[in-house]
Image (cartoon, rainbow, N blue to C red; front, side, top):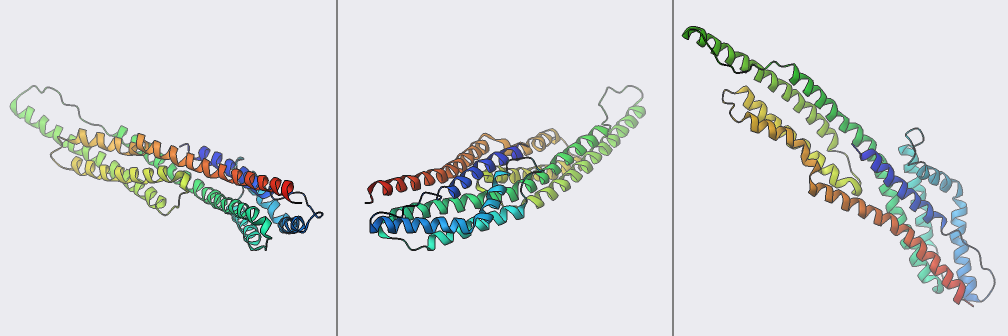
Length: 305
């Protein structure tokens, strides 16, 4: 599994975007000049005042996000990320509620765009942090079940067909013994596959309630579908092994072996790449929105008398 490393990278990107967005409204004050300039300066001062009032919780929020990409021992807890998201949402609401002069209309619009994008990426990071550990730990059950299945199948002694010589009665006895041993081996294989299917069904049952972030939705859905395919293929193979007509066991065995690979098809890979690129775009849009705020601030500084 590579999900853990990927989600850490995604978390780092979003943490950086959120940190940049929060700090961008800390700008210089302009108390002199025309009435228009003073009105805009007062509005900016109110924005800064909101941030100053929330300095401590904002600092804790940034600490939680900046540590997201480190090892498990330094990674923030779900509670810390929840608190960070709540803090940022509160700041967004308070900035949006501020009165503003006409000259600051464009600035306000760009600030609101910034805080909305900031809030959205914050929610995504929070969902990512909540989803990734459970997803990765749950999928470990597939590996454990596969190792156990391989071990059980290797321990089953399967009779090998060979040329029989001797009297008619001896040949008949040998044939009956071969069929009995083959049926016993097939039943043992079916038992092992049934146990494996039960383990996979439990893994899938734990995966289904999870809520994946958009960036990992294609991979998650493909994995859930692949486990369903494994269970279906395993049940067909087990049923056929327990029967007397086993001419298509080889084909069903191959289908069973290939079922889990449906999560790694080219279509799934393309969908997952597209989802990660879309995530990267959303993270970059936070920085772009922050840059747009700075551009408008520079324009106001230049044009206001």
